[in-house]
Length: 121
Length: 139
Image (cartoon, chains in turn brown, blue):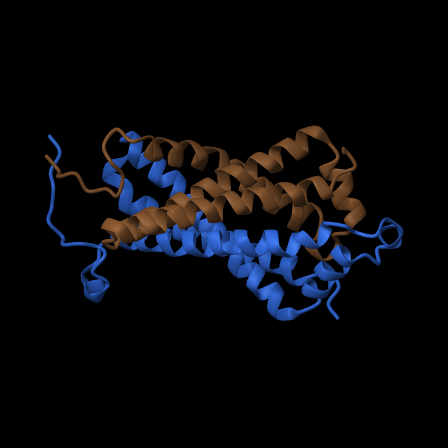
């Protein structure tokens, strides 16, 4: 029997959420790349074009969920990578709260950006 | 009954010559993950130019958001960085699918082959995408 070798706690929800967000992100990240590099060339992006896309409720909701899930997946991934490297005790706690604050700030700023790109409000 | 092999810790990068396919996959996944999360913060910072765009300037595509993106896209180094970002994202996606399969216990005996397949497919997609990324107007 293999020994437990993971940065996740047994029975923890962070492991499950990392996998669930991964499944969503696989599709949405690929879609984002295809739409904004192949369908629309990045060099041809304009504010009006962005506004037209982001003002569709379905597209806006998808992009906002993309922001939230990518932030969680990324910040949780960084935390796990640091725990893997041997981070423990008060340093581990400090990093955890720093990453939570950084993640929340990114979601707040990303939401402000997303709303500024629409004519929905 | 599953078997375990003691190959030492993958965190001990100094012994990289002894690493197996799965250990390389682990390292590449961490590396590409760090790049992607770093890019996510940078991306939102650049897109923040969309806040308080002058509507009149936007009508003639002379607003700060459009100009910022056009200015970045006019730099050849940015185009190459975008190809690098594509490589990192495609590998992270393909190896991520491989990891989900490993977690589900599907194809465990082929996990090394699926890592090599991720690498080859990433290379093929990136090479095929280079013309698209380097094409378009460059100043």
